[in-house]
Image 1 (cartoon, rainbow, N blue to C red):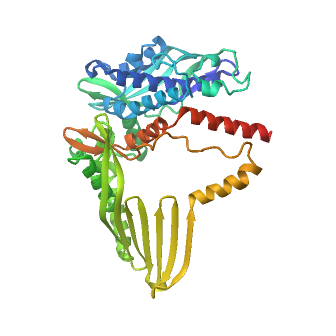
Image 2 (cartoon, rainbow, N blue to C red; image 1 turned 60 degrees about the vertical axis):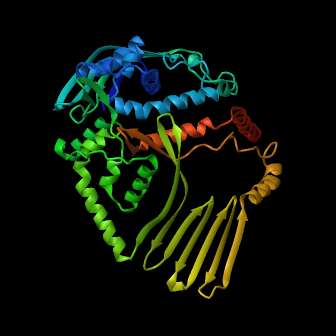
Image 3 (cartoon, rainbow, N blue to C red; image 1 turned 90 degrees about the vertical axis):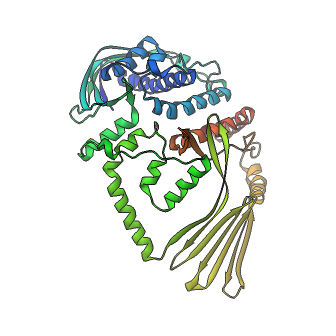
Length: 454
């Protein structure tokens, strides 16, 4: 990806442009999200040339052409990256962290202009081209008073915290280490050119390692399962077996295209490392058996979140045997150390846990039991009255239990594991379960403690 060096024309130009670049990231993500949600046709997406895709980004930002900016991202990456981001923005608006009136099609407070932009393209393959930004001028304008902060923030900021002066700056764009910079990778799909984050990362890593281009015939072919639950179970079993190839096969086409293409460059080394790991496991007699895995799934549009309901896994070795069982919300861990003739049993039921240690004759050597509610009462009774203003607040700000699990997607009748969906959707689920009023009360409590400490 292109890195630019801004030559300052005024003392604070660099700071202004850095701030502008950060907000541009928000704007671009919002633009792409708005496009993805809007359901525009992919037939008109992309650009006719690799350089055209890059030019479209800057032209769209300067002209506030949001659809044009959205069209430049590779569709598979756009779908996996921006939908959760869009949902998070909506939740922040609901919680009034951001202005509820904010429209992603027109983020206020930032104005950018670009002129005399110069690009350099390098052909990598028929469908991959590196595009570098090698020159030009950027003009930025930032109005802090118009940035889209919501009442939760604005109503609690001390007066004068946000400056009312509009910051402007102009600087020239020059590449840093142009010979070492791989640029931003443009990818051709169905005759159109798109910008790709993951192909940019993959190509930069390949060049740094000085490896040849991967052969298309060696590409890892995606291979999913017939249901979301089976996909997750296969992923877990493959992870326990250290089967790198199968793990990559279970990642969805579109989202993981770059990984599927470039995996042959590192797969042999990865599989050699896993063979060595298995050899070390055999040396200590370590075996891992997945006895049972209880999975359920909940729908999220056309996708599904697979949740863990219970299971049983057994670890055996020359030194210790461990059995872990989760049934009906109760966790039980049994560990046996033959050399010391000791058995450990840990059970967790509700908010209480109990640890018991026995010898091989069954005699109890130690037993300990603790409950979270008892600890909370102790803290509330002691610290709440003596340290904190107004005692301790209710830290449970959720209206319901968030649906946390593994995000799975369906492609051509097969189900795959989505790492990005799992990471980003978890954040969306947590945000969507937060009660706005409880959050505001908690923020006010922290402010009161800070004011009391001053």
